[in-house]
Length: 153
Length: 328
Image (cartoon, rainbow over the protein chains, first blue to last red):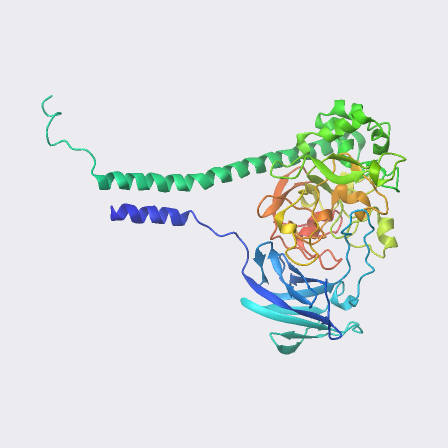
């Protein structure tokens, strides 16, 4: 009888399996441009070793939180390229023209990004103090409070 | 005889009975979720079959005419007036010759067909091959098209919802290469199989037909496209079978009604309207140019931030990037 109970439990536990996501680490932070918080910016983390990236949008205080998928916050653990953009390619109102003119962040932070960030298991807080006059210089990015020089491509 | 009626014979004890009931309960509780999964598995099979049919229809069209159909036959480029899409072109190859003749795809633009109430009724019915059974969206889409010469919002016409969009390239959506160039873009744009007035054929798919996506899924709406973070509340809105409006005022020039690109991750939240997504958990179905239907995981390597074709998913969407993909 005890044996029967144990074997039933084993049977049940064998039936459970994971969802197949790679290891994720939670990422939050604040995006500022010349010291002022940027709202409505799309922050995209792209893993350097390939795979699905994570996206977050900044709120009025410039705070973002990355989502890997809906209901799965975080980003793949490891080194990421980061791009930050405010251009809205899709009009919310379906009959208005989409515009890319809203871009207020220099090119070197989005399409030709040189920003990188390391996502660690557990929680990582990564702030992006951006500079509107930045060209292709490597910007200074702070990881978890400490300032680190971001590496170039 | 006497032995069988022996007084030693006894029934179950209460404990034994309870154990048996408990085991049966556990087994049933295992079975019930499996039944739900079997239903979703059946819907997936149906969706795969739909894509297979669409792939075969496109192959038959290509055999007859020497190329894949145009993504959109651009007759009107203003005022949301309707143009035929690629799926309308393959109706005869999909066993829908009667519908093809009834709405007169050969003779007129979609804008002309929308002047006729009986043709509108036929197009609002649609047919099931273009619908993914897992999609919970309404039968009639909320993406409007206008009849020829009628451009006010009051004259909008709404047709049936579809779930399959042609591959328009690996990064961003434009009507043509010329339009992309006008916006200062080239790489990763208009490098799929379908664009406005396209005549892409097998020989143009230089990466190999098993390495290039032909048609993929687009769902109508999904909880994950909700406002999980500020500003990402757009929904994919599904696709159109019969066509769309390539007017400048329309989002993505209406090409998003019939085609998709790799601007967002599979089942991703940003720009789902012009990308590929489904209600199947963990990915979406695609039919490759060679006719094989593949379920591509949403964990696939995809770098959407830059124009460069530098990830597996972008290589699958690009037909001539020179970087075939092995396993994916």
